[in-house]
Length: 576
Image (cartoon, rainbow, N blue to C red; front, side, top):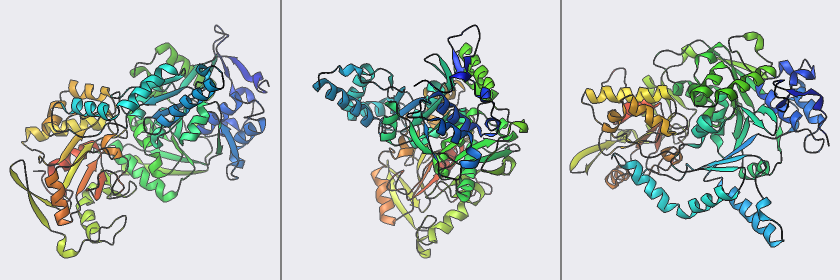
């Protein structure tokens, strides 16, 4: 059946009549201008794919009428522009496509006709772990082990990359899925089959939401849903409520994007945003780089929302040029977004749409902080970390308690490591990892960590040799600018050598701790600590022997590694 909305199709440039788009302004419906920008993406997809079978005019009307029906649990179909997979949850999808080819062949058909209809990318980043660290060849050693352990899987995926059309496999060692998506895969506006339309994505990884920071609507789904989309089917979703999160003011000089996202996580957990979209607006957004926005969008699963959307603005457009996207295509992207009313000016309040509810955060009120010891929403100001941990030691077993008897709070266990004697106590740091898609791709915090390392080395400070330190960047770009800026050598001197390009410690691929350390922790029943620049810190996730795990910015990971303990007040006590 013909699309009932063909009347609003027109060329973006009269000189290129074959390059068309659905001009939503031609709907001449006042409700469109009041829709949240994230809902406008859902609307465009519904209009473009309307066939009165999978997507109906009734669905389009429901989305246009979002303000009225948002509370009524109305289901609408959504056909994303792309699918993104990683090698843990994505391999079964490739296996299923291979099985379908086998079935078609047995029935006498042409197996090569079985391909994804919706473009799909699979990024291999979940297989590498920290077996080697604190040595110059850590990266090569860990990658060799990764290939040895995953030979059969990688051979299968290599076959898949050649066999299937419309599917790309990004090889191991390229980077973390969400950073690769941000730097390379995301288009912001698609140019396909003669039409321009907003880029959108679903992924088989919960932190797919990171791409929302660039203005590409995306979130994580299950493997079955992802496969359905790859086969051309829409996702059925409840039309979400949209919480407007207004950012005001400017961050203080010492505050990082990590501090901001941990503050937002605690705030939104208290409000309750499960099943909802969060859309950021307000003049404070204009103060944030794309890397900062991506960090905030990345932790969307931790604050419970479905998506955490930053509409496209001029900073987003500039980022596309900075990351090497074709300038002519970027200009078409901007022209399209202007034409359909999806280009945002965060300083222009007249563009503010309707929201289900509005909450505010003054960026000037954010202070340096960590989250832990067991949940990402349990934010603790750095100035309160020592006191908070000591309170947690004696508190009843739970999210903020370890139930250690008061007379054992100062227990010390001595042990030998590499011929030297050391002591471990409650709060001793045994893992310090600059890891995860959340932070390792943000130049401000990564260079901040490098500068802190430089100052520390120049002051003669070191990290105790038994602490498992590691640096697993989001992509090779990070290594490049750390090396070119001259700080990589200082990070290496503190034990933070590059150990791989992947999720690593953040997903529990932290590798083994030294036996002597494990024995000391077990002997004293110690609450040992992991400090990581990750996004999740549930007990047992990072490592079985670190009962307390704190999420922190990369500079704070360096600081706590040097201190060797979480029981330190940086405002009153020296690092070393």
